[in-house]
Structure formats: C-alpha cells, structure tokens
Image (cartoon, rainbow, N blue to C red):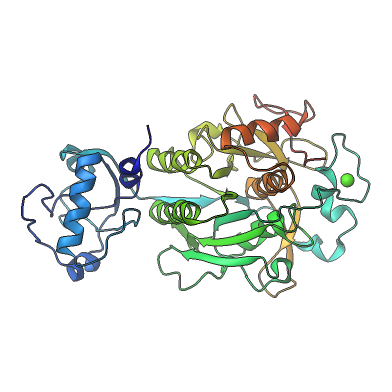
Amino acid sequence: MLNIYKVILFFTIICLIVIPIYSENFNCSITKAEATSITTEKFIVILDKNAANNHFNMLSTCLEKKVNNFDPFAISQEEPNKDENELKKVEGVQLVEKSFKIYLTRSMTTPTLEKNNLTKSNTSLYNLDRIDTGKRKYDGFYTYPTNAGRAVNAYVMDTGIRMTHHEFKGRIKLGGVFCNKCANGNDEFGHGTHVAGIIAGTTYGVAKLANIINVRIMGKHGGDLLAATKGINYVINAHKNATNKNSIINMSFTTTNYSDALAALVKECTDNGIHVVAAAGNDHKDACLVTPAAVPSAITVAASDKLDKRANFSNYGPCVDIYAPGVKILSAFTSNDNDSAIHDGTSMSTPHVVGTVALYISTYGNLPPSNMSDAIISLATKNIIKNPNSTVSYFLRVPH
Ligand SMILES: [Ca+2]
C-alpha cells in the first residue's frame, strides 16, 4: 500500500556515511556549507519508513534548512573510499543507485533541409493528417475534438522550451529548472521546444489548447538521473497541490541500462494519477532493457513513418504499447519565435501520444492511468504497422 513514507523514500538523497541518523541527539558532523561544497559522486538512496523519518528529523535539526517531505536534498558522499555497496549495508537502506547520464531519444541523422519546402497543409504535417484516421489516407486535414486538450497540463521533462515561441502563446509556464548549471528554463539544445510543439503547438500540435509546463532536466550537454529525479518529484508535488488533476508527463529520454530508481519514480507518478508517456528509445533494441520505456504503467511509444512502417531506429518488443509518427516530424524550434525544424525519433512519437491523452481527457474526462492506457489502445488502429518486430501493431488514433 502506498503511503506518505514510501513517497519520502523515493526522494531522499543523502550521505549515510557521515551522518549518524539513529543517534538520539543528532551528531551534526557536517554543516550545510560543507555539504554543498562536496562534489564527489551522488546517489539516490531509498530508505525504509523509520530511516526516512529519522533522516528528515536529522536534516531539520542539523542543517537549519526547512526540510519538506518531498524535497530532494542531495548531499554527496564525503569519503571517496566508501562505495555504493557500503551504503547498501546501512540499516534502513532499501535501494542505492548511482546517478548517471540520461539520453534524449531524438535521432540526429535527419537533415533539416526540407523545412523551407513544407507548409502546414501539405505533407510536411503528414503526422497530424495521419493520426485522425484509421486508414493511411492523407486528405490534407487534421480533424480533432474541439476541446483540443483544454485544461490539461502536459509536463515536458526535457531540455527546456523556448517559451516565447508563438506556438505556445498564453498556454505555457515554467515549472522548474533541475539540471546542473542550467540558469533558466530556456532550450539551449532544441529538443524540448520541438517536443512541446508536437504536444500543443497552435500549428504543429496534436492538442492545440492544452497547457505546457516546462520542467527542465537537461542542459545542452545532457542530463542525469538525479535531475530527472528532482523533476519528477516536482511534478508529483505540483499535481498533488493542484485543483486540476489532469496531468500528463512527456518523457522523451532514455537510459543506457535499466534504472530501478527511475522505474520506481515513474510508478509513483502513475500511482498518483499522473499519466506518463515514455519514448521507446532509438537504439533498435528491446525497449524492456531501458527506462522509463520498460515501466509497465507508462505508455511506451515506438516510431513509425509516413508509410506506417516501423522506423528502423525505433526500439521494439513487449514493453512498447503503441506506435506513433516519429520520422520527419515538423515542429517548433529555437532560433526565433516562429522557427521550425524537422526531426526524427521516438522523442517525436511520444508527444503525439501525450497530445492524444490530452484530447481524450478534454473530450471524455480523466481516467486512472491504467484505464487511460487501455482507452488509447482501444482507439488505436490495429494491425497496420508493417514489420512491427515482435511489438504490438497498434497505431495511434485521436478521439473521433
Ligand atoms: Ca487527416
């Protein structure tokens, strides 16, 4: 059963080596200044209930910092000869995972030369034209429910967003900035803006009235698991504190290996009623090997092209829930407020599904994440993806 303590566990990042958490009168052997000056390795540590309670009491006492139950608080390990195996031996510790890099799921192989030849009503937006129908018939129109995702919050956990872009006018806000050396929510890499444009852009978006919330977890040099942890933590808190519970997270990123900590965090989101849509990944391998794609409660999205063929880069396998367009997708870009670019990747497929969930919510009302997953699959067109490669052959279709 989920309870507050379990949530605490997921977001507790500590050094157990230097701080005795069980002493009756806390031995404050490390000060706040010392703690923030340490720059060695960082771990995500999941504690049991008692240890979590003691830990937060200790932080409040020793660090003179207001410790919120859900605030991640990173203290690096002081003694370099202590490794994660020693952390695991400490009483009360359930899981230790070293923070590592996470990767965007955009393919960099496609040039952007075609963008000047594309316009809204022709094949440049084949992806929108395609997802409103079962058969592959391009009629030059994108037909979608009139509510268009209104009053649905799509959290874009990404490289930031060009928030002044005309595609998002009046429907975007900054949630938070969680990556190292990221000064603000700007998109220095041109990934989050493209993703957000596919979700909710006025021209390029699936759900043209949905709200975008910018949760920046990556800089121009990428990001890490710790930043993703903080970003997810922020979304869970925002969702819990909001009156509007229509929340979806777009995760267009992946890991090299499976992460227990990231999987636990994603499950925590869906257990709290937040829909999580995850990129399958672009390494042409089994999506069950990477996170967040492998998490059962996430809707995991593989990429197909204009001819309904699985994209050759797309991950596949039983952890994939659905296909969506992910080849030559035109969306917003970062050079100016009207900029656009074409990109490939399951990064681009994922926001199509986020937009569709938003359309579903604004049309029929919200559902628990597992039911939403069933509803999206129920809408999907079956057996139309060519060479699905041991993956379900479900292709995204918006409510109609
Ligand atoms: Ca159409």
